[in-house]
Amino acid sequence: MNISCTRLLVVLLLFTTFGSQAQDKTTILHEHEFALSHEFTKNYSTNFAVSSRAFTYNNDEIIYRMRQVQLSHFSTLKLDLKQSIALGLMYRNRNLFEHSSNEIRLTQQFNRRSILKTLRFGHRFRSEQRFYDDFTAFRFRYRLALDIPLQGLKLDVDEMYFVIYNEALLTSSSSRKPEIGYRLSPSIGIQLSEKLRLEFGLELRLEALNIETSESLFFNTSVELRI
Image (cartoon, rainbow, N blue to C red; front, side, top):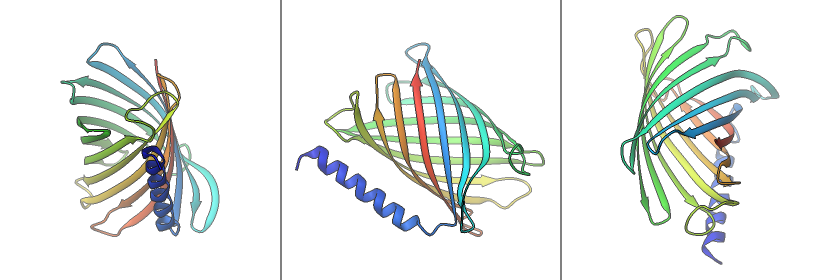
């Protein structure tokens, strides 16, 4: 058995285990994102994305009900080959689909990546200011990402890759207790061309771990096009 087959079998085993552990979750959602990115210079790039989120399983009922749509933008400045900083702006609309506040979010980000043979590590730090109708929340996030090509030593066109995200979150506001959250997301992607990439995966979200834990499972799909 070659290295590519071994990697693929490990990934499939991880997805099967992940799904079986999450199958009793009461809330399952689908989130899809379409993103456009462009490099203006060697060090400066931008990303625009539109995404939607829908309930697919809730309270023992199979449904498909939209929950929100959102628009986002990130501007990224490379500091060197391994490090970058970014600023983001996002608008999320929920009031169109349910009785809930819309949100405007500002994001500041620092990212550092490193490579060990074929395995890439990414460390991402974010601070966010989330503006709702009646309060403002401040959230701090740290994400560790690991990704590896499933065919060969590097990712080429028409080849697949595996990535897993681990993220810890802390949210605070003047009107609510601080909340700790955790997210785990394994995904598989394919590089369809030099400019087009598809990715799909599962994401387990644990919210308010220090108060009363709530769990939700996301099925995520995304399309990224470089222009």
